[in-house]
Length: 445
Image 1 (tube, rainbow, N blue to C red):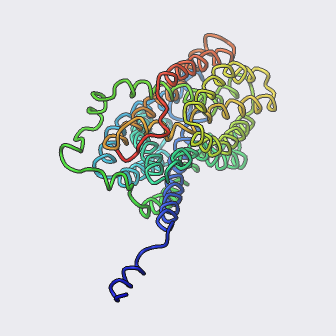
Image 2 (image 1 turned 90 degrees about the vertical axis):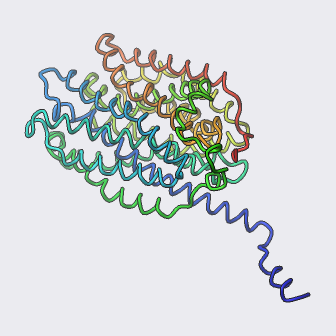
Image 3 (image 1 turned 90 degrees about the horizontal axis):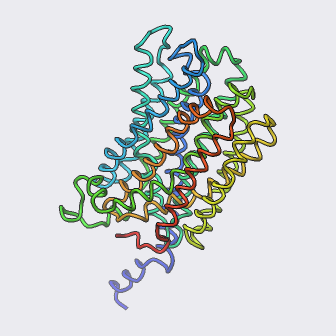
């Protein structure tokens, strides 16, 4: 054998090495996507919790506590309204310039906005300028979130080994509950240390300002991950690339866009009513202590994290639709008992009801991280996945605290929350029945 032949033989990697390297890269990317998503959702959860507890009186003082709470929840909704702007901006960046670049910029924007909220003067100090600046920063948070979820799950899914897309995409999908848990882990001891009055006066700023360090870590992690191989290997040129992905998406896939949005809207309502609205409704209307409600929702969110990956593995084995349909049916049936448990004021019963509710929510959402991207082709996949998910969260989650506040001000029972949530979950059930199974989709096109 010649030296050339021998050298060529030595250069050939052992069988299975390429697959092992791809799996290792996919794992690193999934974890890095998770880190960034946790930090972004920590920022978002801190704001939602602060809106439920203190931002109303601090920025929207009123003689009527309900009016102040509604005003604070309007700023929560404002971020969801701004999310579609993030879909347009970061979807175009992600589909044309790369998933990695879009994720880095979205995290940077979130960090600037969150730290800015922590530095804002209140209405007492700055007058009308305070709520105006708060809304402006909240809108920037919303724009950031418009690009976060789609990019994080897509980067993980496009690196995933064959047959494991739901598993790898589900890892950053655990970011929202982990972000909520991280926010609770900061807010609960801060509340205990400063007391209710101290927290309302000054200590509410601490969780926002701590985001500075977290954002730094997240940016460092995201700068070191590899770009999606599907993005790098896709065809280039004017005929292959979309100059305005959202416009092309609406023209080419209007049905899938609407059905995908509907498929996620019910789960969004379950999550945001449980983890945002209940933190206000429980203490102010039912007299349940704030720390008790935070603890209840934190326990339920921890269970949500624990079941996300196993449910995604199941979705890789039997398909996305069976798991999601089971969760949707469960949410329709469980919505009344879940929110009805609040009127017992019993922490044990409420915790159990919320745990069951968030497990059923996870059955809908754990496979969703792979399912929504699989509905669209690679050239507009970032925009497609982001648009369906973000629009669903805007309608089912962003406006949920506002609608819930209005409903409970007219009907003096938490059962009305179950009716509202159950109807949205019924919409999701119908949309899931109308959509195809996507487990075996060729992800390279």
